[in-house]
Length: 98
Image 1 (cartoon, rainbow, N blue to C red):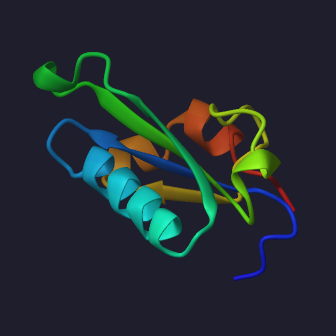
Image 2 (cartoon, one colour):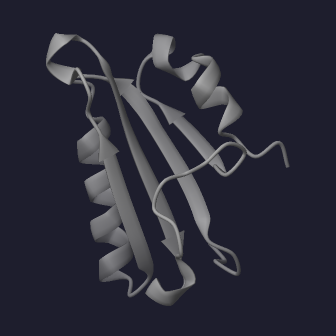
């Protein structure tokens, strides 16, 4: 994958669907490849079947990453781990329409 620009991945799910694990695996893979990476996990009420998100940013170099959280229209990939979180309005709005 060419990383001319930072690449944003928003992983969504509910507690227990592996969202945090997927974010950590992507972060470690980027590290092992010598790429820049940032991971922000938001767990909220995960123990009560609440929403869990992982904001993953990948870049050619760590200096290319200026923000950790993925804002509206800032995600290049939405990776839902369950049907309910994948269709949530705030998650869909995070995807870059291009």
